[in-house]
Image: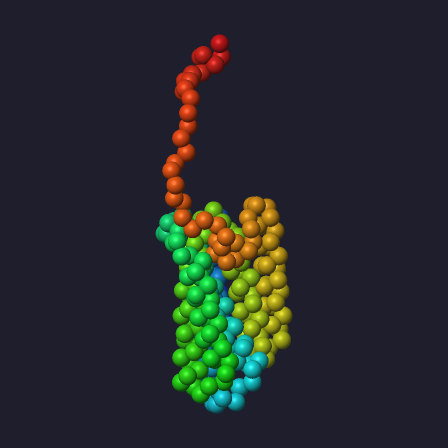
Length: 246
């Protein structure tokens, strides 16, 4: 019954992954990883919402269970939209230049506060209708936040962003482990989350990037590139190969 269905779905997913993996060129692996991360985030959010919908009486859920559902949903949503933007930039489907909105940091802060506010309402343990609305609101705002933060980072920094999203996917799995009372899932998620965070720090140091700025969608950097272009003064001297040899 259930075991056979799960095994069948795992086999189908493995076959699709095997097919995609053998068709992807080595130079396209970063964007492929980003695309797969979006699936992990989508699965985490879907499972969390499904867990809440299948609850007989959400008012009776304890705070740990509610927090696990909320965190899995929010982190999964950020991972999904952020990974899709990273895929688009790396694959050339989106403009690789950063989104230079003047109110970039304020937008990110507002979306973050809205997500936390919806989470506070959800953690209050309301009845199904209110709880579902709060969970849906946090899903929407966190999804937009993930899109906007990733879009605000240039294509050259997308490899670092991918490691951050990899870490996020691990923490989403960790939250699901608490939600489903599965220690193995919690352990594996924590392993992925910690290793992704460590790799992010290493890559930021190697690329001379501020890790806080990258995580917060370019916070602390100029949101616009205004001003006059640099002017070069002096005379231009031309040469060729023959003159150089002489």
